[in-house]
Length: 309
Image 1 (tube, rainbow, N blue to C red):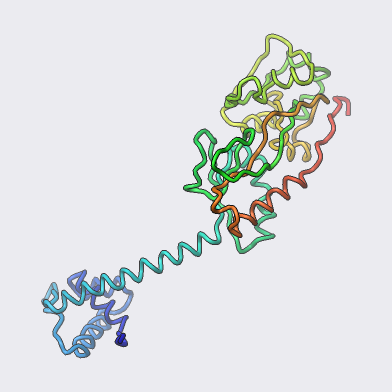
Image 2: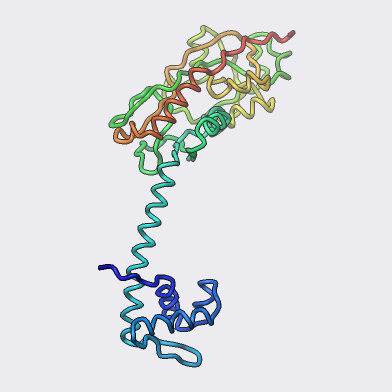
């Protein structure tokens, strides 16, 4: 049988024992010292036992009081832990953690998350940017967005979108870009973190795939992240090799333009990955369906802009 225990009184008594006094216990619980004293007195009367040896500066428990205080700590502590776990589970059931490449996060994903929030107000998205250099384990995130050719062993893999490559620049640079040969008079903005060999989406790859000849020597400026390359191009610091998902919004908004018509199709693309055992969880499936829909409805690539337009 479970006794109808006076839980507020038990909690007050445990605080007095832990703090060795009534004043600190009252401060912790946010009630008056006289209320604490009354709780302890009523508990002693209810049990028919003296629980505290009261002193001028400190109070200490009797052996019976010590035994009761320890039981309260163990019992209420266990209850507190279980409640915390249940609250954390509720937060986890509502939160989707996405591990995403910085360039893709800043240039494509962030601007679209408002659409998700409006469509799914009961769910919350948390973004953890990751360079993708280490294998995805799913230990700290639900879904990974990775760049590559889709070879992610032991994971559930969905293709998100491919990638097309073409030069882009700020509109202010157009009057000095009649042809590819004019790149000799500009700084080429380069992403130095593309360790994919000859198939890397680089200026040389674009030139080979489109039959162009890059002028020599080339003046380059290198950056450690794709989003920095895009931002540098928007600021007019040079001409970048645009990677379609990362520059499509800037092109549509007129912050970037295409000076030349030649387009190369990249050998790489963007992939959604997660642990197979969580693939069919409702919140994971909801995000996967949403982001694939966003990728499918991405606007068309604007045509190249003639310098005289």
